[in-house]
Image 1 (cartoon, rainbow, N blue to C red):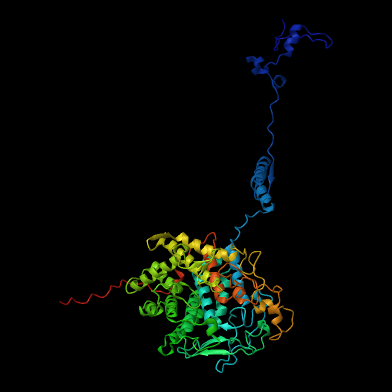
Image 2 (image 1 turned 135 degrees about the horizontal axis):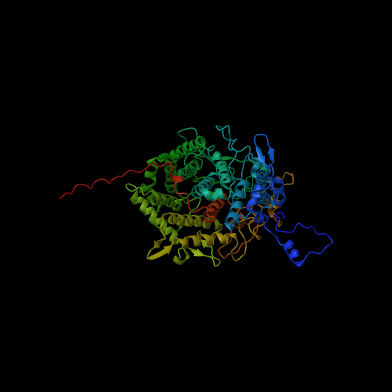
Length: 624
C-alpha cells in the first residue's frame, strides 16, 4: 500500500536529462496558488514542510530616524520638509530675487508744460537783480556783492540800506515799484501755493519775497509805532544829466563808484500804502514763521498809519525830479483800498475792511466811472487788483451787511473790467499779431499785458472754485473759459507766438533778445574795472551781451508787432521788476500740474474771524 502523495504527483524521480511529457510541461508552467493546494490535513504538517510550501513572510523594514537635537525626525519626514522648502523657494523666493536684480524701469514723469519752463526762468531774473551781499546759492555766476555803501548818507540809520533789488537795466532802487513787485509775488504764492510746491519753486519764491521785505523794513523805523519819514529811493538820475550818476554811467553794480544819494520823503500815502500791502501780504506767506510774520505785520501797520496821516496827503513823487520822470504816482486812494484789503486779510481787524469799503475811497479814486485806463493794473494803478481782491472776499465768505453793498459794486466793476479785456468788446486796441494795447500803443506794453492776463486767469479760477460757469458782459453771457483763453493768448504771444517769432523772455525758446538794456548783463566779467564812461563801449557795441539775464521779460514790441533788439533802445529791450512780477503771477496761474487744481481758497483768510449775523439798522420812523 502506497503512502498518499500530498502534492498529487508521482514519487518517481525524473532524470534531468529526460524530456517531460506535454501534460507535465504545461502544468509546470502554470502559476498556481500554492496555499490552495493545502488540504485540511496540512494543519498537522510540521513547520519544516510548511516552509517548503508557503512563501517566506516579508520582514518589515526598520524605520530610520535623524536626531536634530530637540527632536527626532524620520528620513521620510525630513525629505518632505526639504521638498516643501525647495518648492517654496522656487515659487516665491526665486521670483523676488530675479525681480530685485532686474534693471528698474521707472515710468517717466510727466514733462513740465511750457508755462512751467518759462516760470523757472522768470524767477531767476530776481536773483540777477539783487543788491547787497549775495548768498553763495544765488545762482547767477556773473553777479557779485554790490551797493554795500547804500544808505550811508543817512544820519540816523547805522544799518544803511543794503539789500533789495535794482529796478531795471540801471542800478537804481525805486521802492515804489519794488514794493508792488513783492506784493504781486506774495499774492501769486498765496493763491497757487500747491503749484509752486509741485514745481519745486515754493522755497525759491519765498526767499525772493523775503529778500525784498527784509529790505523794505530798513526803509523806515519798523520797530516804532509811529514814523514821520520813509526812504523812497537809493540812487537816481536827472534827465539830461552830464554828471556821474545811475543813468549817465554804464557800470555793472559791482563797479559803481559814483554818488548814490538816498531820497527821503515826509509825505507819501501812495508809497506807504504799497509798502504796507507788500509787508501785510508777505506776513501771510510767512505765517509758519511766527516771529518774522509778526515783524512784517507790525511794520505794515506802522507804515500804513503813516499813509493815513491826514497831514501827509501828497503823492510821494511830487516835486522829486529824480522820481517824477520815472515812477510818478497819479494818486493814493487806490493804495488805501489795496493796502486796507491786505491788512484786513493779515490781521482780521475790521477797521481795515471798513476803510477799504468806505464809499469815499472809490469815489476819490474814480473806481466806478469805468474809465478804461483805470481797468489797467500797474505799479501806479492798483484799482483793478484791489477790487478783485475784495471780490474774492464776497465770493468765498459772503460777509453780508455792512459790507455787501460796496463789495457787490466792486464785484460788478471787476466783471466789467474783465469784459474790457476781451477783443470782441473793442475797449482797447489790439495789434494784428494779437497783443492787447493797454497803454494805448506807448512803449513797454508787455508789463500791462501780463498783469491783465493774471487778473483774468485768477478771476476765472475764482469762478471755477465757486462752480460759476461765466458772467455777464451787458446782454452777453461769457464763459469763464474765454478769460483763460485771453490770458493764454497774451502769455503765448510773449513766449514766441507773434509775428516776429521771438520769445520776449530771455533764455526761453530758440530766439530771444540778445542785446538787453542791462548794465550787468552787457559788461563782461573779466576782472577789470570799467569807469563811469569806460563802460560806454559795452553799451554801444553791436555784439551780443556776454551774459544772458535769464528770465528777464523785456519791454516788448511796438504797436505794429515790430521789435528792435537794440541795447540803446530801452523801450524795446529793458526789463523791470514790476513787469517780471506780473509775468511770474500770470505763468503760475496758467501752469497745468497733475494733482493740483485751482486756487487755495482758505490760507489768505485764516486771520479773519467768523462773521456773525448782522442786521441792518431799522429804517427811520415814518413822518407824515
